[in-house]
Image 1 (cartoon, rainbow, N blue to C red):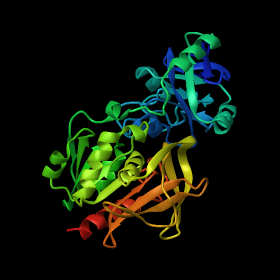
Image 2 (image 1 turned 45 degrees about the horizontal axis):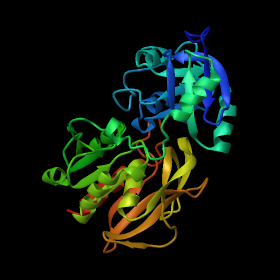
Image 3 (image 1 turned 90 degrees about the vertical axis):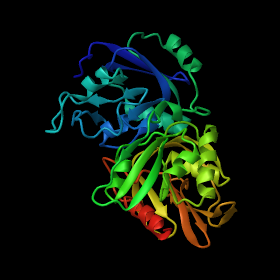
Image 4 (image 1 turned 180 degrees about the vertical axis):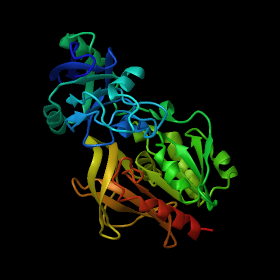
Length: 376
């Protein structure tokens, strides 16, 4: 059992639904948007994904913590989730790579969690009612008082969180082997695996803060510009959308992932909207409308692009179209931009860099290098 097995804890959703369990991780209180992640592995990557800023993550896999915590699989420098909800914590880690138990790392980083609740019932509730605000507490069991705090906490719709997660200073990830291309990656909440996969393809990656002006990007003479994943409501990211429009107007090849896909959609003139409960997990079927191929993909998003399927749309930067859709619910999962018939920009709503997987979509980094090579 976890270290706090005798310490009780409660979880209260904004509609009043309450769950009782045991404290897991740090003792305290946590508030955020309750979302569920369906991956059966990769919890360390989930916890350290900056896109989960402001969210309390419910793991649908019942047994969490088996592989402990290592020092190699972090996607960023810290845990970003606002709180953590699991059913059955592993009593001890059983991986040779583990350096310490999962709960020890949660305690070290001050992440409040709850264990021993019916996460299946909670997930079904969120699927039926939609993602909503939630509070966790291991210092009070007064559900009514905690509910008042939940209702006073901020909504995810309208939240601008990029400034919380972007890098403070630019840094460079050097290419592996010979240098083929220079890419400027705008950090909206980037995961470490993204520049790693680019570097393996001979790309020198300049990771820059989200507030970087276009003149600074252009001064690096990039072969391409990349916009990363990230947290919050894309409707609030006006400055980043304006920056992307400058990139597109300059004719620099563009690639975007997740939040970057949503901002690409906005830059092309499409709207965005909040999904009922979003896509979070490593088992989402996505179809590439160009090839007809279906990929099993990793997702983490609560917002989506509102763009028409099945026909081209003229934009100031070229002709845009929807390139990928989710086969579960028809949500837009990718966009393409062509000028004079040539690909000049594309984006996907899912995570081709996914760790711990799947890796069906890793070829998209090759598509990026092909696009940049064609523009030289």
